[in-house]
Length: 109
Image 1 (cartoon, helix red, strand yellow):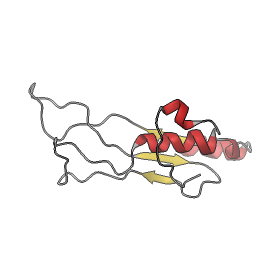
Image 2 (cartoon, one colour):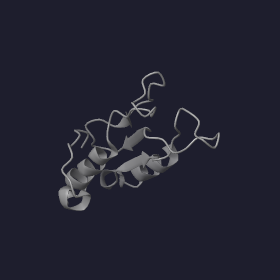
Image 3 (cartoon, rainbow, N blue to C red):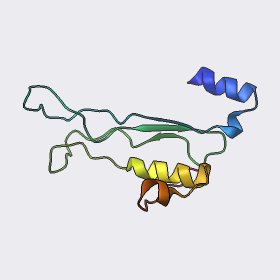
């Protein structure tokens, strides 16, 4: 990622780029009926851009001792809030129309 960002800066393109790394993949804390683990509910996000109000890590590491009623990890930021913010503030399109629902906007852009 560092090489990519440095190349963007070197070529004066970082102003035009917003980088979002997000994995919708993590694991349940408890094993499932097949003695394995299944897809979970929480993961972190990394945002990079030249003129962001706050870049870096969002949705920090979840607390393994603080699970929801289903035994799932609890996220701090709904990924749809990230998407709504980027759609509205970066791409300047109607996020409500794309997401079919109104989500809070974050203040990183």
